Structures are given as structure tokens and as C-alpha cells.
Length: 508
Ligand code: MCA
Ligand code: AMP
Image (cartoon, rainbow, N blue to C red; front, side, top):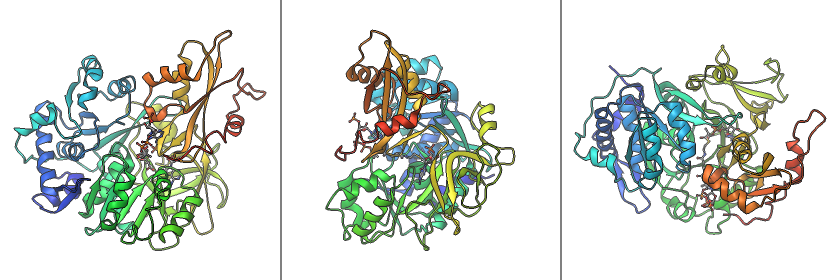
């Protein structure tokens, strides 16, 4: 019996004394050490009653142990459900209810807040701290460090990643073993990863980019990762000479360029800089090349599809484009109204089909049917065009979405939270340019008659409700919202009006 994802990513490293993770203090985790710990974790999961197909919800800080949870889930056939460490208990409530997770893992600092939630949904709540300690680890310490791998097929589910929706409700994207494995294989080959690589890993591990793209490629090829708990520019620059590749969101590159210590010498041993999750400005691409001699390789993907397109490794990497469809993946541009394929050069909806495309949204058949066509094409909500040489360009979004520092923020969710506050009549939440985060959130708020609202009051109340990265950086109190003749709020006009708000804000 096999378990394709385990067999490809983890099994080849059993007993291997090779370096897998290098921490900022230069301590190392070998593959063997990592797999033995994950085997102990897998025992804890199964002893607690989790079975193949059960969900494990995880909201912990980034650490080698946190990554070992992913390996443990794959080994035990448990569905891994990582959650942004910034989410508030109010936000977590929905994920636990919707996913039906049987166990939750959290940081010790969040335990008190999450305990009532766990009790409400009858999920077991255990602690895994950033240093690897906590009640979960204590249970693991006594477990055997070998585990009988649970048989799985390529179509079995491996992970749920929640992605916000334009309606404000998050949807659990169901990813199968093969969705993850096929994409990792394609990317490892396309970007020419090998066991001699050392990847600078400074992304969070609760999203596709840091968890699947970065980690799965390294596991598949046997290369090592320098594993940083958060983005730390100085540490990255310090360690770059002994590394070969970096995967980052555009904010990483903007911040690196902002440091005069970051120069050609620092980057001279690197073979590859990859950017994704948000648009990389052509200007950043150009400045990066001038400073280091390297052309950033930009690629495009989504939670539901893993990676879709990539600029070439050997050919021309074109600034402002996301390159070509990856091997084995079909991408087309369609008329958003009719779904018909448009002639080359025209702007339309990006649709994608391939082994990378997810299995649908958990418990949301209508939403799945609305976005995933019967013929297998997924409607991304991104608007794009393709040039004569097959390079795709993303020119906009057909979805009301703000991408701040690589995190997706859906205005509808912020508007709903604001509308709930006393004294708020109506709101429009928009994204405006930001020099560090690419885009940031501005809330335009109309107060109820005779109510005085202030930025500070609104900011204070919102803090309780939403993760920090979603919080508006400005609240504009206005007498009314601009509307067209149909009564629809004109967000484009608001975006224009407030576009210069953060122009001169210092970076970082
Ligand atoms: C942190 N803050 C943010 C963000 N990050 N606010 C808005 N947007 C953000 N992205 C808040 C902090 O809580 C803090 O609030 C203040 O902003 C300044 O924090 P700072 O220390 O400067 O930020 P940081 O901790 O250095 O984080 C910035 C970051 C991080 C490194 C860019 O956001 C990051 O790692 N982003 C990567 C996201 C990612 O992995 N995306 C992939 C998902 P306060 O001052 O109030 O305390 S998309 C995906 O997976 C698809 C498939 C794809 O294509 O890749
Ligand atoms: P997520 O829902 O977090 O998976 O975010 C996916 C979205 O990020 C896509 O639908 C795009 O809008 C955006 N995205 C990812 N990569 C790029 C890129 N290279 N350029 C522009 N947008 C991107």
C-alpha cells in the first residue's frame, strides 16, 4: 500500500543525516530528526482518535515542529488545516465550525482565548509553542519515533486552506495529494532545484506559497532550507552568501532594495530569486537587476490551483508578466460573461485546468459549481491577457480583493465588521497603493445621523474583531458615498480620491 505524497516527499529521507532546516542561530535539523519528530506527532494524532480524513486545525508560530505537523498529517492521512497566526478567536470560530476539526493546536498565549471555542465544537485543544514546547509535544515525547504510514491514494485529500470569498465568507479549498505533488514536481523541474540548493525560507507556513511551493520543492529535491520565523532582512542578507534561492512576495524585494547593504556581492552566490502572491512592480524588477545583476523570476498562482504560470528559468524573464502556463497546465482567457475563449491579445478572465486544480470548496457545492466548471476549468477571478509569445499578464481582478504584503483581504469582510459597529451607517472598503505592502486598506465610513465617529474609536473596536493585517490603515469619515445612477457605490472613484494617501509613508 502506498501514500504517494509521503512516498515522494518524506520517505526518501528516512534515516538520512542530511541537513533539512537551518535556523537563524545556525542550529540544524537533519531530515532524520525531522521525520522522527513527525512520526511521534502522528502517533499523538491517531491516539487522540483522529482518523484518515479527520481535520487538524493548526494556529501556531512558524517553527520546525510546526512543519513537522504537516508531515505527521500526511503520514496519518489527516487533513492539515493551517491558519494564519494573526487570526482572532472570532475569526477562528468560523474555521472550526465549518471544517469540523477534531483537534486544534495553538500557541500557549492563545489558549485561554480559544478554549471556549474548542469546548463549543468539541475539539481537543493542545499547545505547541514557537520553541516546540507545549502539551502536544509533551504527549509526543513518549511516543515511538517510527509510524506505520497510512495508505492513501493520489485523490485523497491532504489539506484544507481557507481562502476568503467576495461574499465575505471564507471557503475551505480542498487539496488532494496529487494537487500538491504534481505541482511540486513541475516546479522543482521548471526552476531546476536540486539537492545542492539552499532556500532562504522567510514566508509564513500557513499559505500555499511558504508551505507547499517552498517546502514541497525542498522535500522533493532534498535541498536544505534556512528557516526564519518571520521576514528578517538583516538575517537574510547575512545568510545570502551561503544560500542559493529565495522565494518571496514583492514586499520582500522592496525591503531588500531599501537596504544599502544589499548589493551584488550579497547576492553573488544566489542562482534564483522568485516572486509571487502579488504583482511585482516592473520598477522593482528593474531596480533589482540594476542592484544585483539578477532578474527576478515572477510566477502566478492561487490557493485553489497552486502555481499556474511562471516566467522561464532559462529564457527571458519579462517584468510585468507572469510568464507561461506551467507544463501540464492549461490556461485560457475567456469572456467573463459568456465563458467563450477570447482571441489572443484581448483582456478577459483567466481560467485554468490541470492536475493542480483543487477538488472544490468544503461543504459549499454551490460556490464550487460557480467557480469550477464541469469541464475542469477553474475561474480564477483574475483578469489577464496573453501576448504573441505566450506570456501572460495580469491586468486586474474581477473580484473585489486587496492584496497587502501578499495577504489577501476581502473588503466585504471588513465592511461587514464595520457595519456592525454602533453609529456606522454604511462603509466602503478599498485598496490604495502602499510603498511597502503594495496595497493597503482604507475604510470610507458614513456615520449615522448626529453621531460623531473618530478614526481612533473605529480602529480600537476593529482590533478586537480582525487579524492585524486586515485592519484599515486609514478611516475616512465622509457625509456620503459616491454612487452611480443605479445606486451602486463607485469604489473606483474612491480609489482615485485616496490613491495618494500613503505615497510618502516610509517603508517598513
Ligand atoms: C504584517 N502586517 C501587515 C502585513 N504583515 N499589514 C498588512 N499587510 C501585511 N501583509 C502588520 C503587522 O501586524 C504590524 O502591525 C505592521 O503591519 C507592520 O509589521 P511588519 O513588522 O512591518 O511586518 P512583517 O511582520 O515584517 O510582515 C510583512 C511581511 C508579511 C513579511 C510582508 O506580511 C509576510 O510574510 N507576507 C507574506 C504573505 C504570504 O506568504 N502570502 C502568500 C499567500 P502593528 O504595527 O500594528 O503591530 S498567497 C499564496 O500562497 C498564493 C497561492 C501565491 O500565489 O503565492
Ligand atoms: P490566494 O487566494 O491567497 O491564493 O491569492 C491568489 C491571488 O493572488 C491570485 O488570484 C492573484 O490575484 C494574486 N497573485 C498571485 N500571484 C500573483 C502575481 N505574480 N501577480 C499578480 N497577482 C498575483
